[in-house]
Amino acid sequence: MLGTEVRRGVVAGAVAGTVLVAAMYLLGPLAGLRPLPQLLQQPLLNVMPGAVFGFLIDHLQHAGKVVEEAGLIVAELAGLAVLGGVYGALRRRFKIPFLALLLGGAGWLVVVMVLLPITGEGFLGLIEGVATPLLWAVLFAVYALVLEAAHDRWLLPPPERAEPGRRLLLTRMPVAIAGGSLLVLGVQLLPGWYQAIFNPPDRRLGGLSPELTPVGSFYVVSKNFSDPVVDPAGWSLNVHGMVDRPQRFDLAGLHALPQTVEYVTLECISNNVGGNQISTGQFGGTSLQSLLMLVGVQAGASLVAFRSRDAYTESLPLSLVLQSPEILVAHSLDGGPLPTQHGFPARILVPGHYGMKGPKWLDEIEVTTGARNGYWENQGWNPDAAIKTTSRFDLPSDGELLKLGPVSLGGVAFAGKRGISAVEYSTDGGGSWLQASVKPPLSELTWVTWTATWTPSAAGAYNLRVRARDGSGALQAGSAQPSYPDGSSGYHAIQVSVSH
Image 1 (cartoon, rainbow, N blue to C red):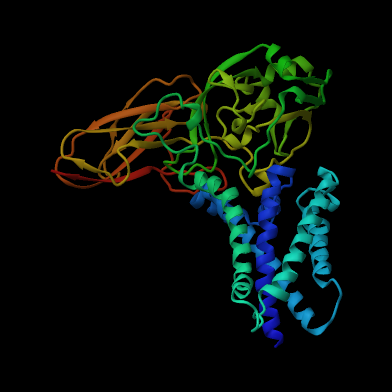
Image 2: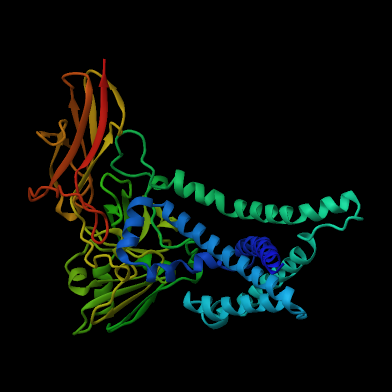
């Protein structure tokens, strides 16, 4: 009998948990409550071995966040179902008044005294104000009410004398409530999940990549489930630390500084060989070097540290900044303000280094000493993050069926600030290599596009490969390596079939 009560409690807890989770996501946009699975993302990454995280990044890419959030939702539902099982066990053995509310209170205490503090929300979640613990109290009160109703009424066999309509209502009530809650969850989550998996912002355009990536197709990588939306009217960039004249620059003040425009290719350190997390844009802003000269760097300083609105941290050696006028505090992309997903109102741009070195939604620049690991360095990624030489096919596509005759080949190649001196392709799996035509880059900081025409000698299957040489003539690394911890390497290879 006790086992029956526990099983009924688990089912009731799962129904009540579904209501709680759906209400939690619904309150996000309405009341500013951040869903617990999204808050737990960072603590989970902190305890995840770097090699495991790198493996997931390489194999899941944008879908990784979906898998992580879905897994944490399932874990939360499982915990709430177990709490329901505890209710069933105690309900059978003891006659405790308001037992469901007491267990709901216990769940509330776990969230506000354990889980929220480890996510950085502070004791009781008070970092965001008193509304956070109060909203969680409401959620667990709802959980308790649904748990009690489901266990003590809805999931019990209906009385034999009950009218057929009432019997049907009682048996279908848990299904209806759970189904409605799942529908709310689906409306909240599925559009974003679908976008991340099937239509990511870096989805490759058809044909040869344009030299300048359209803003809407520019790759986006973010550690956040929900990126900051910064009000420009209240924003300022705080430049402080070991400087003679600490200053705050609002957006107008930043625009009033000497401006420069640069064509720059950005690449994510987690970009796979032949991947799409690489784009080229026209960025406008002010040189970080000139900004530091304006505030006056004090003797003994050795590091420039950055902090963003989303608590992202990064740093650069002061020596690198002072010898690299191309490093920008950027505020525009392709002639318009930075889009929100690209860091509005300002971000750091570090040509020659992977995108992790350029924090978005910039709030603070501190000149200091010593060494500081940034957000991704704390996950085990290489702090230097220098871009490796890379090249890829844009056309033909992998697995494409081609007609016997001239075939257009093409793609992009990039080596950071080192430039590209040559691109070579192979049609026999790397047995021999031919020279491709390389178009001059938009600037010394961008990729190049390459093209070639290949005429297969016969029908059949072909293994095509591409490799590049940087500006010094050094050949791209051919050994296949995953992106973790310092960027992927290897030759991009595709298979095509040629028929008559």
